[in-house]
Image (cartoon, rainbow, N blue to C red; front, side, top):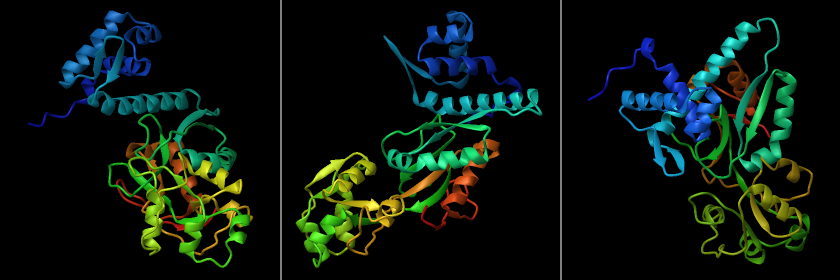
Length: 322
């Protein structure tokens, strides 16, 4: 049976603040010290909140505290709500004077290594009052709970988050010019068979997944691609290819500069779509935050002309290479 909605007049703000403090510090003692209240008072607040919700928020282990599924669901909403209250109060108190705002941005490692510097530099020139706190976790999947906006490398999914497609990934076989010259005149199948293959590992996929998809879509028949080196990130695969070794499958948009300048070459004019793209992810409630809205619209404009995105939807862009 569905419980009635909470009336905001009775929201337990002190208990929510106590919960956030304990979750942030992973300790009742550290949170009590940070919030300048007694540990017993802090504990009572958290227990009262758990009773009110009818759900345990922490798994209390002998030497640690771990958020339960309910706690993981509640924490980002509480943190973001308090952050926005803090920003609004600062804006009012400092009306007429510039206020610094820190935006927490997540980018995947290869995207960050290749594009973070020009993106963040140019954005700061336009919006100098917004500081950027950049995190770059490894892997494919949803954004971290504590970030304001995230660029993720993923397949299309339907969620309650706002998803803007920055560009669909197209993979091409790329190598050092010396390898291309040595293999001049070969067909694609012979070229793949003759060279060391460079792989980029994807979470929850076989280690040779991308090359297997490339061979299938290129209609190369039965071909052994379970050989060669495997790297955790595309940027490492690029560095290896730039050293003059191996053939890598790379996104031609992300690594446009290396190809355009001739440091790497595409011996074959073939690009395959393996279903992944770079998406900009925003929480729906974040669209009303000026700093988040500015960063989102600026990044979308940087990568192409867009139509409005919707929560859970996909935004298709006319992509121009950066």
